[in-house]
Image 1 (tube, helix red, strand yellow):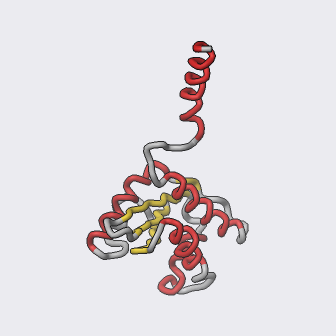
Image 2 (cartoon, rainbow, N blue to C red):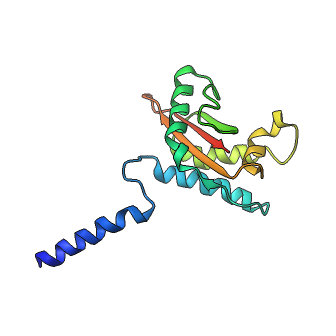
Length: 150
């Protein structure tokens, strides 16, 4: 019985990194939902999916934190090497970012000029291939989120 348990534990430990999850990242599921939501929007226009830019996620978190502290949306742009950025400043929850802010941004389009449709244009662009979703929750519970595109 002990040998079976040891084998099972060893197998689980070996498979854990392959699951694509990050137990150390409290925002991992929200990051994936953010990327998936943007890609669902893109699919409605027949556009290829953005890849999840995982190597920039912690940097994007830092941008969201910095912007929350200065009260300035896009204040830290482009410190992560992104070419474009959307931001959801001071929302009520992580859920509202996914189900509210991203919807609102997509609803800006289609159209020009960039000043009126910029969030949509970033989300629908074929000039970028990756997106990193960063989050920061303030002490008062307000959520700042950035979507960095490159």
